[in-house]
Length: 226
Image (cartoon, rainbow, N blue to C red; front, side, top):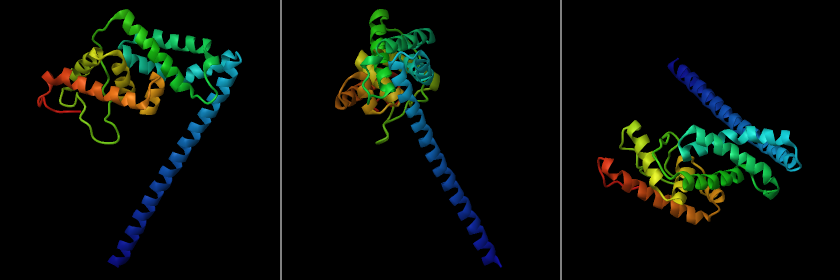
């Protein structure tokens, strides 16, 4: 009797596990399908926009404006400047659609425009304190790496990390924001910055070292390394 009950319980658990695996597999396929559909729509709209179709370009703006605005907000630190720069990204994109190659994805191309505008913005306004949201910050997936804010109180860390990033040279600053804050791949970060991946890796590593040095007085252990 107990054996039968045990077998039934095991079968029920096995069935639930199978259902979970099936659901996860279905969701992964559905996510891939939606991504491919979005990419196909983007390619069609990009082709039409290149021929002067403003409605198609408007759909591209709707598709990518949020991501570009979010990137610029993390870079410049206030919503007004981020909004202005994001709009300028798409103004420039509309004027330069002919320069994008057929096999080039739109997001890295727009990101490259945004990064160049960010450089211009830094040169015009100088540097000042800003707050960086911590949630997207993560170590490289290849291994656990200590981030320079982990020993700090959350609010204190936001302000201190924002100020520390402001002190980085502009190329290191862009590389750290794209790779560490935004979580972009090294390949995409390199494409956005117009640099080789190895160069970007060096920028990110140097940026992390400098951030740790800037934040060392606030870290309890002081000797942690990234």
